[in-house]
Length: 560
Image 1 (cartoon, rainbow, N blue to C red):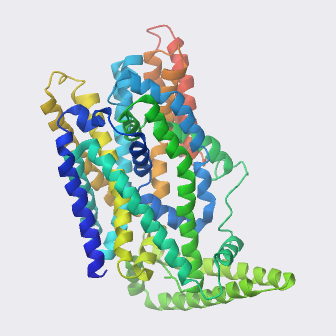
Image 2: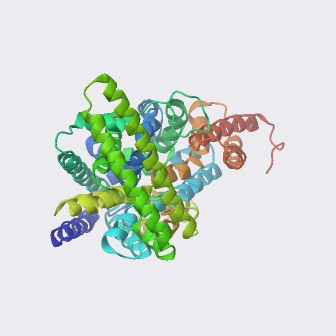
Image 3: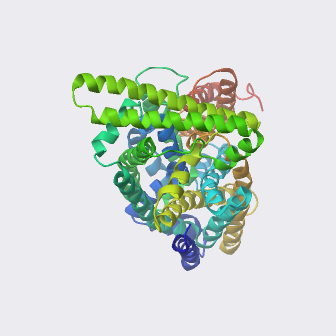
């Protein structure tokens, strides 16, 4: 990066930490630190909801996913608007009027303390793991940019975010989210503009989308009903609906966002804002990944985007690497020429033939890229190797002009820090209110509660950094974080369904039903090939069914 890029990134980091210091005066008690005194306007809460969900994984993982797999991932969000409407009717008024700090505190009011503690514990485990993956995403970028060791990069990102979250609490989280969303959208818009300007003369946006469509990148809807397929219309509308109901209705990182709103109606409006802006926003981010694919149709892409691992494999087997590089270069040249002929073809007959030739060239190119990836995986003895997460950052570093690289890196940092800060604040809230204050420290002063909340933020920040060190090679990070969540979310949702919608549900049924739901998800993951999104349906269904039936049993006939 150039000095101006460093100036942009360092100025951004300094500003964010200063914001934490500045807002620390508004977080002098537990209500201010954890709930912002329930004083935030709906539009700030709505942007914070979107920023919390749109982590650096969205920018890095989703663009890489689109480059490799096209627009099919958009189906993942089809159930989101319906989920938000349901939550506006149920969760928002229930939690807000109960005057709780955490979603799990409500479960003690409805059931008992052990049900509250168990659900909160599972939240802490799931989000503690998830926030580690969120930190790993920008670490991929900066380890390339700075040439730093990945471990050092992870702790630099994680601890800087932890610092301003410890200082400013949810006030700092929310108001920095608002500013970070502006940086993110501005950076994405510049990226799109530069890609379109870099297309060959005579190639329009319409032409670019045509060649992307011919390669199958614009195929969005898949109506096949296949439980082993990750992204279909049905998994998005039904299985992902359960995931979103749980994430926005039972996950403290999201519940805490609308608990900071000034009223029930403003909390509802903030969720609806996210519901109807998320899909267009996700479409634009996926489209950016498609445009990166088109960009590399006409300019030679890296054979493998993770250059560090490629260089290590090349040093071990230089002859095989050179052969692959020659084949890759020839495959790219053929694909580029075929794409140009397809764009320039005039008659329908010529256009059909040109399309067939282009599709064949794209398939041959993809085979060569997969062979190169397999070469790196085999030579380095790394079965988990996957370079999807490197596509976008490498594109930015190699092709963006002076100053823009710093802006995009700042945007990726903004996305990461907004999500990490929200998660850490939620983890600290649950640790403090569901365990520290609930068990033996309920008489502590506000000063001690605040001190413990800040200490918990630090501890969870360190834990997340450790998790991040193992996450960078797990595959597409956008899939990894949702897979983590899907092992927990459905079962947690089942407990809240029992609380909200089953009047006769008993405390012991909710407690043991949650354990049954968690067990069912692990059994399904080990013994079936169903896609991870359906784990949410399995967990919720088993929790509700078993919880209701256990509640019907006479006391003393269930395990204790």
